[in-house]
Length: 315
Image (cartoon, rainbow, N blue to C red; front, side, top):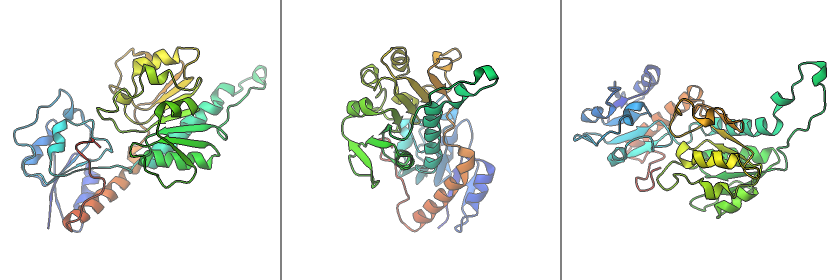
């Protein structure tokens, strides 16, 4: 069995796809209308490019065409129009960047706790004692214990901190030392660092709103590596401006991306903003290629590929 694969990824990646033992035919995709490849491809490999969202795209009459399968290079599929999930099979790149994103979270925790830049001395007059924060002995709350949340939990436990977590399914994650909670307000009230790692869905939109943010432990650090839509940004600013509110926020994601020029999150003194780089994509691209090639092997054997997206849940 061979496949015709239409891919939105780069030439080197596509060359690797073409070297799969089944010798698939890899074709280019129209960057402005990638969905038109459904007319001639069995598999459409997509990435979150502006064409999928700007302006919102109505379902093409040809969709899903001859497609048997859509593969999202990103873990989340919320960037794409809802009709993408009408393909016979949709899978995603979940787990490919989990370690990189978890490393980003740990870096953010240490940057906030230790803040070495603030205590760096540049003259004799600066030479004075200053207290540093702690990581060991603190509590890290993880909202969403999927691949990213589990990678964060393993690292946090190794640092001597406590982990409390909330998982939608309520199932154990198989990590000793993680305390599972079923109450989000209780989690945010206990955590010194709150890590948001849930998928972006209609159900999670503005999950962190004025009410929930008012229950966050005073002085806590909020880290969002999920989707910007999960955190109500106006509510976050109001919370950060309260004396008894969260102390800081590290945001790798926003809504929209990028934020409009002049948005207050760019300059807020209690916000560290990075441009959706925690996945470190260029360094983990080989992992995605390995995952896609393995899933192609499963597919041609008649097996189910990994990480099938549930259209009802949206992830």
